[in-house]
Length: 504
Image 1 (cartoon, rainbow, N blue to C red):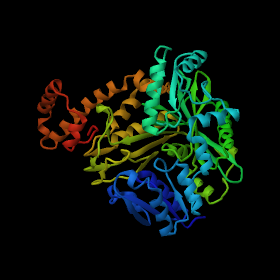
Image 2 (cartoon, one colour; image 1 turned 30 degrees about the vertical axis):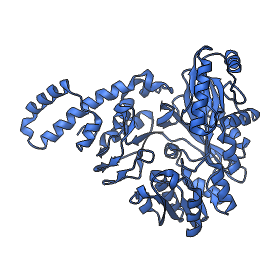
Image 3 (tube, helix red, strand yellow; image 1 turned 135 degrees about the vertical axis):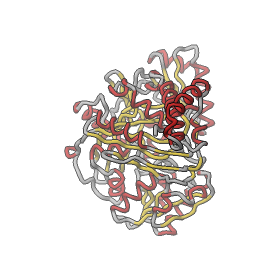
Image 4 (cartoon, rainbow, N blue to C red; image 1 turned 90 degrees about the vertical axis):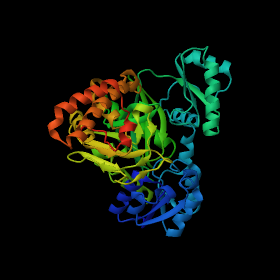
């Protein structure tokens, strides 16, 4: 086992990996930027190395500085977390060349999944089902129309090197295809430096289901349950759960077996995720994430398997300590991503100082966070405050615990998306498990968020007033009702006045 590991990341994921290292008796090294001098993760580590100015391009993405920090501190391995350099094959290769263990898959495996076109070709050759579409990049409008006509509309144009929905275009007829193709190519070139795009069938009522896999150097590969990630906005996951509401033992075995086949097709080693789209009884390979996922805690909650520790153990040339038959699902778990952003303002980031912070607790609740009262959320990185996880004996209990946890959560000083999560969990269709990737739009969830925001405004004003004189409740209540009928106070206004976003 390693004696010292450098974590090339920040925030809650850095702390998550450090906790795993501490349990394994491994010393940790943090790297931090100027903006993160007072960050919790930098304090939690046994050692911390400054790597540059606040922008990620000058610090967390500087391969030379990260590798030098590992060499200077005697770290034998580097854990990349997720984001930043975690899926950069060049970084993995440079670690290999310097004799530093990259805690992740081989650089060749990352490379193989880096291009969506290459990934599709690899999966097709391995017998893994993929969404009908082109086998290679396409640029000629006439050829694109021919392809679209053959597979049937609607179709989706997707950048080969893309991610996060950037540059994706949904086309419903041949007339709109040429302009959509040109637009997607232009965005792809600007965002990724590669204008290559491809076309695939657009699936209706799709569900996004991913399978966690583990693979060691001894040839063992297992799937560790699935996660439903269909609650999305602009292709960004917001709420995840495990298991999936539609899953049966037979379907889990079928999809899990295909996920293992996909991993073996690229000689995968480490923790990874094979993602599928499920539509009307059929499922198709979407992509493979060659790293630990943001939503990995829900898999840990329902299986009892510490994925971060397994990942480190595998990297140290250890075996997976269990077989497929040993993996059991216990109960249900949800994860809500609590971000410093304003859902009433197109989810705009809300960086700033946290004036008061109290995270929830109690049975079945886990909070992976890297913030504290007085911490300043910087504008340079992802606005994630925490990953709030709720586990219960069944789906209903897990939902009830998550609702209770959201009620307990207090964040003052910055705007958060707590109201958004509350609105989703109250939705009857969500509670039935009848969801797909279009759920937020189909259910007009943002209208529900506005209603909750107004209710919270009332309770917040009342709570502030009641602290002064409880005998004025009736008069204050009437005044607030009158005020709210004529005015709408934004979450940003409430945050600037030092008010939390929950009913007191």
